[in-house]
Length: 387
Image (cartoon, rainbow, N blue to C red; front, side, top):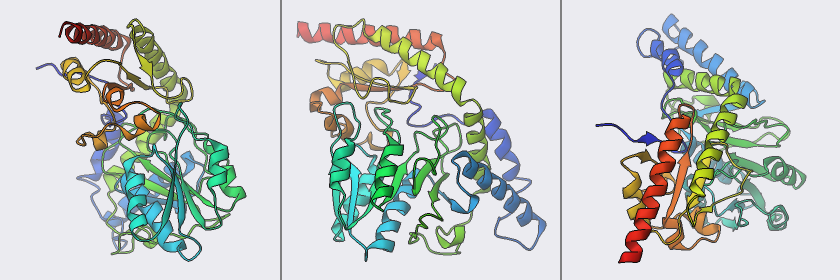
């Protein structure tokens, strides 16, 4: 059976062959525990982890000591938000985030509310961007953390991170950003952007699933963090657990490839996205969700009015693999919280498609997908009118 064309790169990406090649020796030949410092097997994996940590730190203008390896961005977000809440609760119990954040940020915030913390969920503008004046007004004397993602996983909107970081710095409030979708795709600099904590993951940039990292600032200011996993004391006591050397090496390799080819790769994705968007506008009614230009190059999120969402996904499935929202919440029956925050009705949110264009997509695939989407939407509308 021929598989559909894959346009769901915001959900995950295939492991790049070069990444897999870098990982393979650490499954069999160099399989030691990096914490086993008494023999060669431990030394070689300890060295590999050290080099990978340095590479990841350099990519965001951090120091190696500021990188904490996790199982992914979800754990990194939980460690950042709950770790800060526990470490700074005597200074304040107020946190600010956006209504359009990933559930890995929103759910920890809801959990903290059950413990007596206050959380302000700021709305976004119709284009998905935060209102900076509203953010600054929401800050209070007891605000300890602002958590706003760099690039949205559904609509691809890139927030003004540097301006947000400056506001937080001016008010001496810690700033965390979930950069899972942004790492490797846009330049990130924790110093110039005034970022205090940043969540990362490998599987959005052709690395393996199951590995991520949290950047934790060590100076100006030094960020305290209460660990959420206790055990062997790895990662300077901030995240216990045996380090997964193959995944860590692969993460660094994936990031190296992404950054080395960032300009050309993102330009190629942008051209494919614009080609797809231009074709989709042949339909009578199609709505672009999120800011038209301040978004990830490979992201296109569109709504098709007067179409039933489940019928649309069934019609598209044989030819193209896409999502109607976040892959992490696809089992939920509620409409996308991101799209409803933009002002879309539940019906329109259900009839929305997220196209995630990636490294291995081609113009021929985009043409095939555009033809199929247009034909499917027209067919469904015709059946609705006949019914």
